[in-house]
Amino acid sequence: MPPESAGSPLPGVAGPSLSPSRAADFKTCPLLFRYRTIDRLPEQPSRDQARGTLIHAVLERLFDLPAADRTPTAAAALVEPEWHRLVEREPAMSALFTTPPTAPPGAAGLTGAAGPSGAAAESGPVAESRPVAESGVDAESGADAAAGAGAESAAGAESAAGAAARADVATGADAAAGADAAAGVLPGMPEPVAEDEVAQLKAFLAGAGQLLDGYFAVEDPQRLEPAERESLISTLINNDLLIRGYIDRLDVSPAGDLRVVDYKTGGAPREAFEGRALFQLKFYALVLWRTRGVVPRVLRLLYLKDAEVLDFSPDPEELERFERTLVALSQAIERAKQDKDFRPKPSRLCGWCNHKAHCPEFGGTLLPYPTLTPIPTQPTPADDITAAHNEP
Image (cartoon, rainbow, N blue to C red; front, side, top):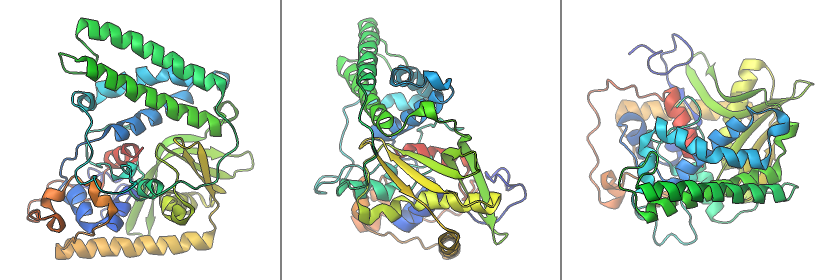
């Protein structure tokens, strides 16, 4: 398969490539990387993943509006239409509400742990507001957040308008869901529709409204004019390794300073785990530095659930070290491919893994290494996008 068909944004590049989510997968568990990237085993998306996709879509659409119209009420009004748009594009998302929610296999007994947003399926059917997210790091930061939140809280309280907007959305959803239920139909959902399914969807949309309240508590979109949104950036390291990813938002000041912003719908990590939470943004900072000659002034994570902000300012020396880390990581991946040796790495994240039936650590049978590889083993842009938004 030509490198362009394999998803390379740089024509003629046939060497190894890395995205933040793929890199995080390999760091988390080489076998998980293999099953997602090489075997491309299907994974079942969760409602948290779908909610992350929805929030990213709403926030992207919000910035399509004139600055004066970017209000909590306007954002709340976008929730239901964006959900229907996502379901139309990816009907599989509607199946999330046809059965009662269940805990992930193995999640029971993990004290104090909530499902990590980033343990999401990269090749699962959840679509994104980007062309099809890439923050595979959430697989780590989500678990870290489960251990306790602790990032510095941003100034700003939830506005009355935000609460009112959420109430408006709930009222509108109630009315629409009630009418649909009366007719036995709910857009994008298989028929017949049970009352509990309608209630589950209403609760899902209400949860999205709460996250939007968290967004308006930490940021005023009326004061912002993003330079780029949902943009693919990429570069080559040593003329060989392609690194790339999708940025949620890039702000550029009049002086030319760059601020990379990433939305997270999971909880904020404890201070001890902030470095891992910033892995993804350092990835983007490195690409921007190598392609534009400017080190971003600020890398910003917006944790909507907790209405908290985590800022970090990188320097060239740190990005050079990070670049060497990515090169070493890519070399380890290539050796594992050559040896066909991707060993499992047990951790607290195993509780949310979709592939324990094929993992020796859980008594499963390791799948034979694929011998026919018509499917590219490098991540495609669509994979990068899906991964990013699959992580709330």
